[in-house]
Amino acid sequence: MSTDNNPDVPEKSPDSELPALTICSVPFSIDLGFTTVQGVAGVQTTGVSLEWRIYDMFDAPKGPMESIHIPFTSIETIGLKKRPWGTKLTVLCKSPRDLQNFPLPAGSLNELVCSVRKKHLQQAEMFAAESLLKVAELFT
Image (spheres, rainbow, N blue to C red):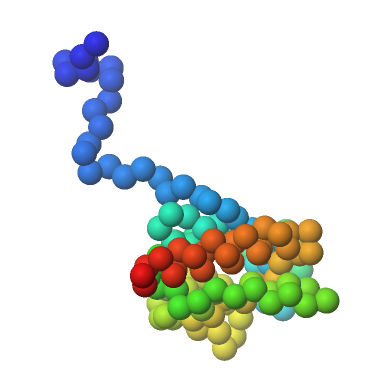
């Protein structure tokens, strides 16, 4: 059946892009004093996506859900530090411009350091491994 003259079938443009596929994701949190950032970091085919929401000290949301996308070409390194009292996931960007819309603690311009709960440790390990693999693929 041809859709050339059918007005009910939307026409696909040749330059339309498919949404990026999320390979793996991990929930995170960042303590900012009186507020907390809670969100999800995801490895996609083109980069790392961060979706978050800010909560006040009573765990009430402050503002809408926000998100940014950091391409793999802008990422310097991604690290995971496992400690007995908590796991830290670190994303170091090449430029502060990549994280300018993210609520970072004072003093951090191009480094995102977030806490990962113990029950999400396996997801965090997979996130770090997949994202480092994607960054390494760019340089080979």
